[in-house]
Image (cartoon, rainbow, N blue to C red):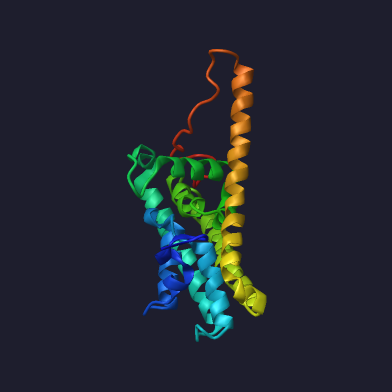
Length: 236
């Protein structure tokens, strides 16, 4: 069974939330998606939104502030683990072979995103699927100054973990939203994919211009290189 919004039925937010662990299970998923390589496919945005909606409709009995606190903590700790993993693995991550749960293209996208936006990428990436999983790891590989990482990690964790949950709680008060939750989840998924599509089209256009400028027989560009141990975001 599949749904339009999220693919396999076991990935539906309501199914993920409706477990014996409840909110603790949601926190585990947020933690995994925030910094574990295997968590990139998890539906974080729609899961947070649905959690907020279920709290405001009393399906989840915990207080909203307590749920938000737990989700924010899970998001921050997840990024922290990703950062430490990146520092330990280092540039060798860029030589890791592809597997069913690991693709080099995801690492390269996160690397480009980090290089383009600097420390604020830790906040922006929270709202971009896949990129949010790999960005803290790339920050660790690049040996980003830890204090800067911690500040932007906390900021991003609060804005994403509490922000999306509160949005779900607020909109969940509307009967129209509750009756059209599938459409809302589809909208959230599509909205979260927009930055990826824009970045892809921009990169494709830039590649075509570079190829045209290089002329016939000339290379249009080079592949992303692993970050140096001490790059422009490295600890000094």
